[in-house]
Image (cartoon, rainbow, N blue to C red; front, side):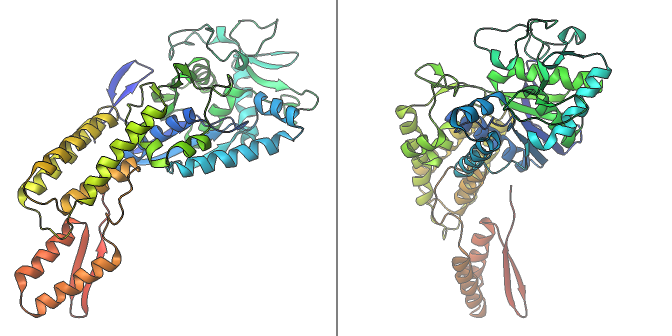
Length: 458
């Protein structure tokens, strides 16, 4: 295992070394569930789903944690507009989000943690910040004092807001000690949800939810924190300040990874500006496989445009791979040259993916392999099928009917091998065994007959 990761914290590409050797604790900021999820979310979560899959394929035991922000100003505003309790708004759009992720094949998240389930942990973390002199109280709640944490800005390289930042998440108050001080706990207001706590009646600020959740599951320091690039400041910077100030332990995360933005006609896709395409609307224009391929054909750190042209290119590229898979003859016994070409292609793809999860580089290797196989005189056999299946286990975006041997086909081949052995046609029987072995099927001969099972591969 030798994976390199571009670390936002150091602005360098570094060898990935989790704290617990072969175990990865991974957190990615989840959605604020006040409206339908858009394809900007789809890009980020599809790319982190791919990263988690590749870490697992590389031998790591991955725990992938994602929060659900279900207590927030935006949810409360929508609740007031629609006359529906905020918890119903949050529950509705959380369910819709989870359905959208399932439709896209994003299945690697192990834990979805809702903010409202972790109020005690949030209060406990704020109390520690108060005791350590990092928080102060105003008439509307508790605030983090940036002046008490000199390292603020070490992730983003800045400490002040810019016009494109989420100003609403900083919280305005004329008596704040520093302009960038942000709310940890918001005092009760009429018509808003609140909890009875040692901090008084109220609800959590936005930033504190994430660090309380990650500390609950991972402790004060863990391996990998991900999210979209627009969250670096102020959200992720605030997370660093809160957790490191509360615990006295650094770093909050050893590696920070950020996905590039999705743009429409040159503008960032965002629900707050109204410039967005929901995932469900996108799925009426392209299949989930085509959307997934479009996202994974770009490097996760790159920004991208999603439009009809992008989708058509993704659809065409995906079909080239699927059409190649349909030319494979699973009954062919591959020559050493065929087997070697597939092995070399897989090795080259892994080398690309080891280099900061370079998915487009890996796909370029795959297309080169397909071109070489199409020019070869020998038929394409089962080693190519295994390669495509291994690729699809990572990318999850190819429709290859019958690519994996069905149980019925395997049973037929096993019975045919038994017949050939009984007829003492051992060369033909061995050829079937070799064919099945290349496809990951293990055979065990016994006096009672032949047993078989499928070997698990990365």
